[in-house]
Length: 308
Image (cartoon, rainbow, N blue to C red):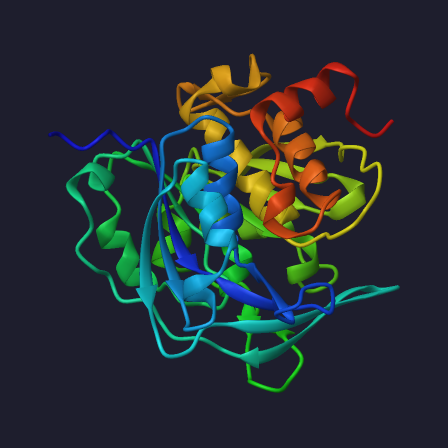
């Protein structure tokens, strides 16, 4: 029997995020888990290569991914990232309890190699420039940049690592990063010069919305400010940026997911409003369980889901 065609492949480490609200003392997190569950619940045929440590390997949350139809491959390593995420009046503060290990490139199923889109969503710098060679040249590549911009030492607060040019950033077609992972005052338009012509840099900024920069031959070609979506009740802000980037990628793969588009991207669509609403909905519940279904995003959008 021929394996089913995959629309999007996600790569990265699961993290264990410490919390007093779970009897285990932690919830499963990491960009790859949020991104994979998002594209699956939005209707794409999704695969994910997820790095896990011993504790994460049997996490109940993995069954959420499987139940949504994610074709899941686990890579078990001796150590995975562990974080204590503390919300403060000045923003999130992260304490790193375990750094995790780098992810070597394994042999992947043939059906994955033919996927329309790939998503590299590291949480602790576990993917490096070698992964450029694993992504087919004709695939759309999304990169969660913030997972490469963290200086991690076990037992210490997570510090920012300054953005620098890299082969991964240059190859990516859509790069997402949180403004909170960048130094105050950084010129985001200058950062766009690290990307290839035709790519998009998406800089999210919480309740302030964000900026989408289109890259030309000599740097930024144009930009759009987009509004944040209304959050009715903030329960857990973890994963909002990952869901946003995954929802953007979903509309690149299939604009019909969002019911139409407002922007062009390399012959495909890119719908920031739809993605912003998806990112807001995940904040309204705890952990991965709050990742929204497509119907919920469309329903919120129909009622007017953006901040005034």
